[in-house]
Image (cartoon, rainbow over all chains, first blue to last red; front, top):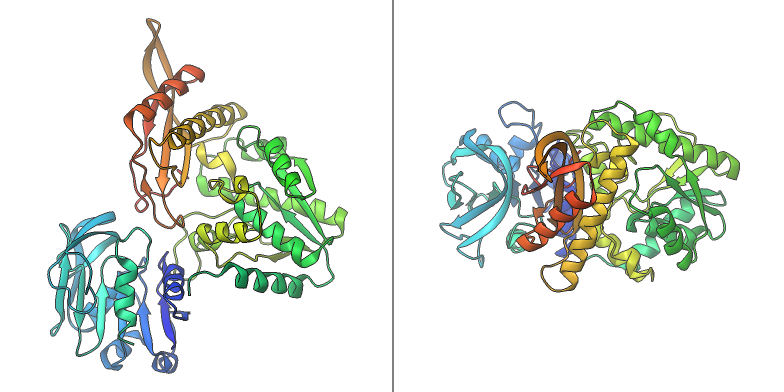
Length: 184
Length: 318
């Protein structure tokens, strides 16, 4: 099974690769300029975080792929925002930034947060946030500073988190990645 | 599959053999677990065709040279010690900017290695670079958080080919590998120490006097936290040390005004160094550290405890 991990400049892209490996899946890291053909050949795609902003940067073939692929996609941080922005959600600079620990409250576990406690500590590092989700998405969790810490659209097989499930400090992070990988 | 040390060792040994062939390699060891593992792998792959060296930058921990020498000789590694401390201090004189410091140190290291490589007729340099080193050094769309001396701090031109067997590993995986290679626990479980040494624990310009202050403060922090962990008062942090701020503050000692340096105590919990949270050190342990530092180091008048996680901070101050 081929998991493509798209590197959008996150400090944790290689950690996503490591965690996938720990869970028994071989991932391949590719730059965000990855071709459509390579994206189409993957069984699932994970979009990393990154230092840029969805409104300022060029994401090449990724938006078209998000719109049309039908493959399971997990967006993390910037990847979460890219999914929202691409599908006519709204991404803005948050009222407050959040870095380090954030308490995530689960509103509806859905598929992605299945089996995860109702409230847990997650590691975050962002200023931008999803203000309005795209149509068809369900908000799964929030924190004090951020309304949509996780969302999913089962019909389109799109899943995303504002926090970083791949880092060691996020409680239940592996479980969340496992929930996604089970959709492949 | 979780990280498999046996499989990794097998792959690393054959890839070192493939890249170095019948050539000769210099191995820079610092006494930390990364370079020790790189040296052990290289020794398996190349046998006698390696030359291990330890560079004393003057910015090492207390008694580090002696300690590393003893530790490595117990592990059967023959080591050349090069004292380059005057060289490092004069190159760093008056430099305040952290990135500039790191680049000067990266370049100095390479020049020392090159001189040795020439003597040894070695064409390769084997380094214990691990994943966070190149990740944080930046590249492509990834921002530079800090230029690690062995990656972003390398000079553009160097007369040796680099071999980095641990590039895909994180600290916890290096430790698993160290145990599998049979390295002693004092090596495999040793806390991380930054490549640029105490240089990144002295905020602002570096002098031998400041290095002496922070070296002693680090020693006290290590001694007290290790004792506290041993007696069950707390878990041993992943990394723990002191850093020196250039800021002086006012105090009173023996009814006399004092105006002295500030030391920051830092202790964090982590797995891989990519994220970290500050350790919850019991107040009585912090009090002991603070009292010892201000009593034993005349130049320090105030001690702070760093309560920032990573992100937004990093483990080291620079």
